[in-house]
Length: 125
Image 1 (tube, rainbow, N blue to C red):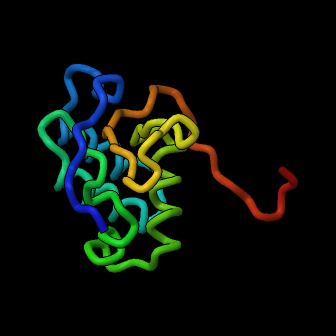
Image 2: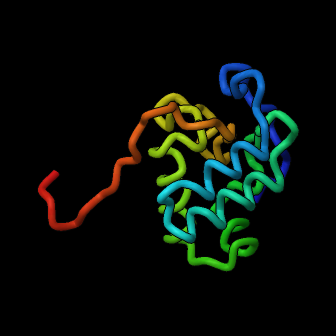
């Protein structure tokens, strides 16, 4: 596995004024699953001062499994929940060219008034 970090594209830069404390407070006040919260705090711990994690960083499922003490499936679901609820941003998988390198992540504040989308297994899609 290649562990070299690739710089985050400028398009992924979080909005100016990113504040880790406010972001963590939003995570704590959210309805995120407990595994997603643990993953969120692991990401925040390793993110730079602007809330960015470079491509190939600790957001790799294998690293999150080790750091958060969760299963690979729980790590993937947690990252997906953080993205769908607006706590993280990543380049679109379809346009990400380095398929063998995990995409970079930017920690972002969810839009005000945006309700998290919860999936229910008993509802038709």
